[in-house]
Image (cartoon, rainbow, N blue to C red; front, side):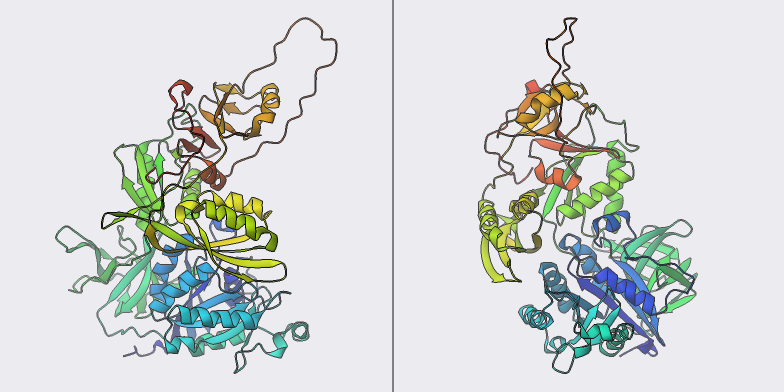
Length: 635
């Protein structure tokens, strides 16, 4: 039974593949809904608040906002589009009643679209399909719509879900049009016809479709009060904040509540009593404090200091049972985080001890449901499990910006034991590449244990190819892929399942150049060593014994003296000294270093530097690198 008066509310999430225009569409919706006053300044990608989100151009954390359309409040959840942050998507989909599936009019539905849509359909959410960027020169909206239908059928959508509404849009320009009765794009949306309607086309058709197609919340405000916590935040004034949906009842300020947390050894939930000190609803880019809220609302509440995602909050005098905790996909990659024990330890970082690193990782898992932290046999090492390399790289980058120093290992896959057999994760990989690159990419995928399962022509001169490849085969593959496709190819992956362990996969083919001394690199040494490979550092940079300073041109490691200076004599040379002309060093970013390093190497991460080093720094104690390095399962 629907709650009385809830026709004034809609809860939706926007899901899309990376770079299909999701955050841009949210910006346009906020502006056209009258969220901002005339004197308020706005910027592009307003929902991407984190520094890393704006730098990388992707959404990392799911965020809530809200607009008012007439008498109806519409809560909008902006979700990440990258599969590595699937945990963010899975937990936020529990808060909404429908989704806007945003698809590029040229690229069509891609792997991350499939992953997120599957979760939404399984939860029974009502979809609206928005085909964006219909003004692209290579747009093919009718073909893309057919692919969306095929995807829905392939994912087992219910008959009602297959009757989705279709909207065509250009989010960048802030306009949308509803599809015709046959699903076709209306004439006024076709270029150059749309230029005639410029200034007259708005997002009103999209707003009308949301109000018409998305069902109002069915939560009963007469039922016992209960909130499922989906996310946490922090405010300097009121402390820890819990975000979630009110699944029943009403709440008011200064209400006594109880938190039902994870079950203890006896199976009973852990509890914590508290009093609501603040209640917020979402309005535009900020939170709006209110005195009361009721069933169906997405709220942010303060008053419980130990709340974590997955907890249930009920009235203090209630005997209600906890709701089913949020479950997210299993992690597939792991890395060892350890203290920095190199010669430069403590020079840059503010937090360098194992206790400080451990406390930071434990804070992360309290709010990030898809990250796991495991203790190891060594007290200063921690195994961190995540969905992919990008998710782990974002965590490491966040820590170094906060002042942490540490060392991290090469990513390794998580292996499961099933009936005594080892199972490893299998990825589905879809690439859009030039036709000339299909052969080389397929060859390299084959060397990494993968195989082609489908291919079709995309646009002129381009081909879309689908592969199956073990997750281990993807570690370090992105750099190779970029080289083969000259930086033009697009690669997307998603977790497809678990398969029997396929054996070792080849890792890096080249060796490393390793410093044998502590000191400062000299132009004289760098110039003499340039023919041996690619250098990672420039003149005047500090180095130490065991630090990797370059990539060797051959497959073996090479110990080098990079601090050697030219001998000076008082005898005048017959000719002038030869000019020292240095090739610019190849600077390793964090993600590139994670892909490049081998199992006997570590990345030293500090607030000001990213260095690569050997696990064993002293050359005389270090084992020789084998010619054919292979990936390891357990790291």
